[in-house]
Amino acid sequence: MDLASDRKAVDIVMLRTTEVTTMADYFVIGTGRSDRQLQALANGIIDELRDEGIRPLGVEGKGAARWVLLDYGAVIVHLFAPEEREYYGLERLWSHAAQVVRLV
Image (cartoon, rainbow, N blue to C red; front, side, top):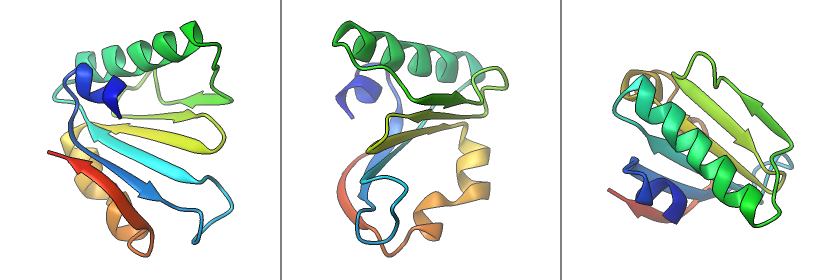
């Protein structure tokens, strides 16, 4: 979450999804204010974690940059443009997951 916050992502939430899906233990969801910022957020997170020896299992949406998904196995990072975050409503979809922390 700090990686996203340091790069000026807004409305960051971490959901503990362990009890509701086998897909991942945590979802981190954040919003960027522009396509360019979403690209910078995704690239920054990937670069910082790579420097620590952690590589994503998969990356989706980086080219379109309206919803970028970074799959780190136990943690999946979702970075959205504001309109897409509202439209897809992951917090509503995963409402049974415990909210661990929220940074507004």
